[in-house]
Length: 274
Image (tube, rainbow, N blue to C red; front, side):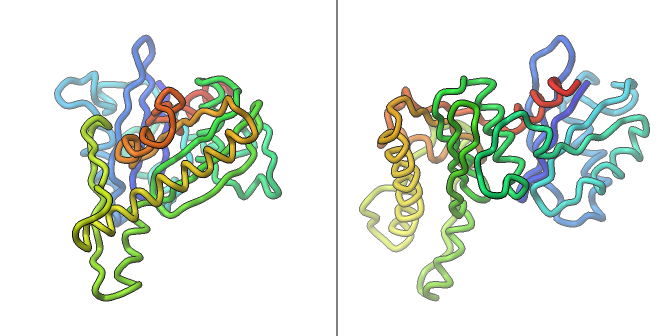
């Protein structure tokens, strides 16, 4: 059994690959205090199913060693996670993925400085959606908008994530409140903020949302001016929220939502490397 792990700024995400079954995807919030990591691992990470032993990674349920393929983009160091898991599963092995392992041409000035999450998303997009020109949007703590063309990572743009951007308003004026970003389990449930906003909070929400949508649309238009075949692959925690707005400004048939894209990239790379 292999597990792909993305230690991000906000969440720890895992994709559990069980032989002869479909992949199962789970997300846990990283405890902010490392001292609580042991409890997090034993009570949550190793008990990803609800009721049956087939949904647990405790040694009694899965005695064979598990290989954990990890990327680290957040503050929690992966060695802390490894140490906590080994206390319960001492035979497991761990592999930290690096950008040098990704079989993707990288056409930027400093390839080693590109976030591995961006490269893995690009790699997965190519493997799963072909090598035609793509705009890959990862709407997380930051929003990255990257270009991949003919299996070449061409760089892109980095925007503040919606939550990060919302914290700017009180810094502009003490009369502007912090606004929360709603979460929706399905994109069909997401309701874009109205424009024009009829009070301060609605106006702030509208600016956050439609300003971000407008930026993504602008990058899409730039790509379309160069090649008519551009598609958009969107992933990340705020993707569900952004999708209805993107459908208003980009042809829906050009947009593909693939939430566990980075984890799929880790998993595909792990299989490729054996």
